[in-house]
Image (tube, rainbow, N blue to C red; front, side, top):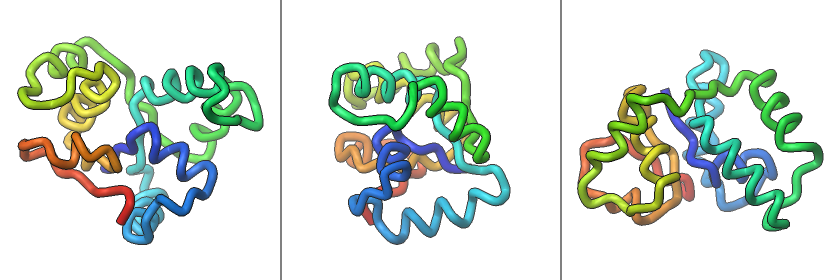
Length: 133
């Protein structure tokens, strides 16, 4: 299972060149077996970015989310055990979104796909894939 950070989902949606070839291949490999996921929080972040004019969506955030889920993307809920796990991530940024997404990957034994250097450099055993590669 791989869990995409919010910016990775946006890059995938827009076919952004920052999404590296190794990462694209990893996503393509896992997609047919329904092993590509995001945290529900990522849809909230996308909605906030669109609402502030920082990204453009071709549809409402609700329709955008529905399109991704219909295409086979798995959504992991922001549940209590994720919230509690996010409290115990010593050395990770205090950004709540980073902490919830990282905790989601840990709870679901997923490789976190991100280009966030703070998460990539974080000293932990969590499997990570640099999205730029």
